[in-house]
Length: 189
Image 1: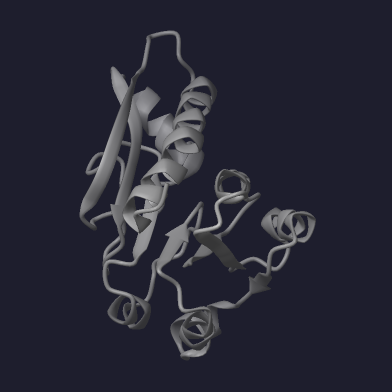
Image 2 (image 1 turned 135 degrees about the horizontal axis):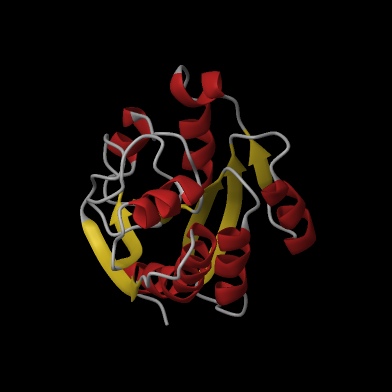
């Protein structure tokens, strides 16, 4: 049995998609979802999906081993950042080498780094008249969006696309490819 712990900061649509993808897979267990926002909608999804949803604050993440100790109790084979916006502290990276993955809504190294998430990315793609964008699934290291790339998937951007239509295209790719790449990393069907 492979254990996954998910991290999310917002509504949790990627979390729910991942949970649904592995729902009937007896080789995978979604152990918990951790969030850094007490009012995050992902906690409502956790209740509905009957999954442990845990909130932590900035101090417990960066200044103590609280989150690390929680993770150790779940013994994750993979930690998945699914819309999680904080930089992962070095104590987690050191304890889970090559076991933390993230999805980014652009083709890294373009449009990565602090503050480059969600609509900020799609507005920048549009403002720079890019002809393509996509998703990047990558390992997490000590720097924002600089870990080794696992997979990138591209989509075209037309002159008529708005940040909203770009976001829609990117979300569809996230939903399709992120669970499949997680399964490949874990070597499960």
